[in-house]
Amino acid sequence: MSTAIVNNLLDKTKNFSIEETLSFLANEYKGKVVFSTSFGQEDQVITALIAKNNLPITVFTLDTGRLFQETYDVFHKTEKKYKVGIKTYFPETTDVEKLLNTKGPNSFYESVENRKECCFIRKVVPLTKALKGNEIWITGLRAEQSENRNDLATFEYDAHFNIIKFNPLLKWTLAEVQKYIDDNNVPQNTLHKKGFVSIGCAPCTRAIAEGEDIRAGRWSWESSHKECGLHQK
Image 1 (cartoon, rainbow, N blue to C red):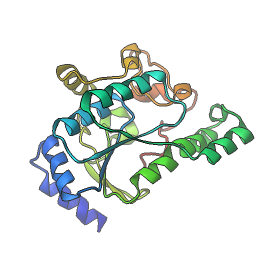
Image 2: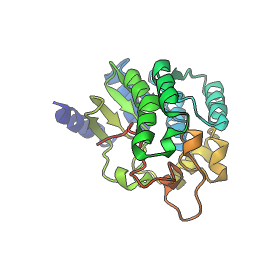
Image 3: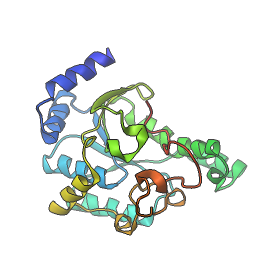
Image 4: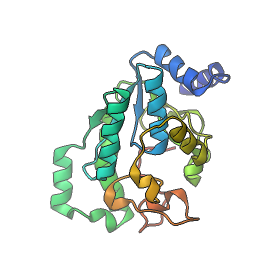
């Protein structure tokens, strides 16, 4: 059934622009379309497109409790510029308290397993709550962001969250994203100008050097697929 839905969406929207596809989804799945933003450059482009077309799409974010102040700053600027309310989901207090009381505040540095546990508590659990009851999940994923994302499709079924994902900027380059931001005066995180390409929690993100992989600044102390569990195949 999910494969049929994905194929149907691919067929119906094959000649649509991104804005036309967003509008189609908003009308076809009224009240069941959500967009998750972490206020990265790609997400800011999508937020701008949603606001520009006044689409009834719920925009939400996950506040892990360990974000950069610069991320909160662009959060505020975005709501103010586009007059859009961004719904915020937090991790469960008892889960965070248990993690800190048993393993301390920096357990994620000790092993990939510990890091994924922290990501699960602070990101995956709140995301599960945010996606519940919805049918379309819009993301800012791009294929060139990592090797793990090269084989993503514009529309795909996410079995883990039992939802259809729409990745509108999948084939965009970083240069195209930046051009849209510059041309349309879209608010962006000031850390991007300081070498931070992919921005997550403050303790887990660093700037990258010229020539480094886009995701090199995430969990730089470990060798992994550089994913937190939000996007799984």
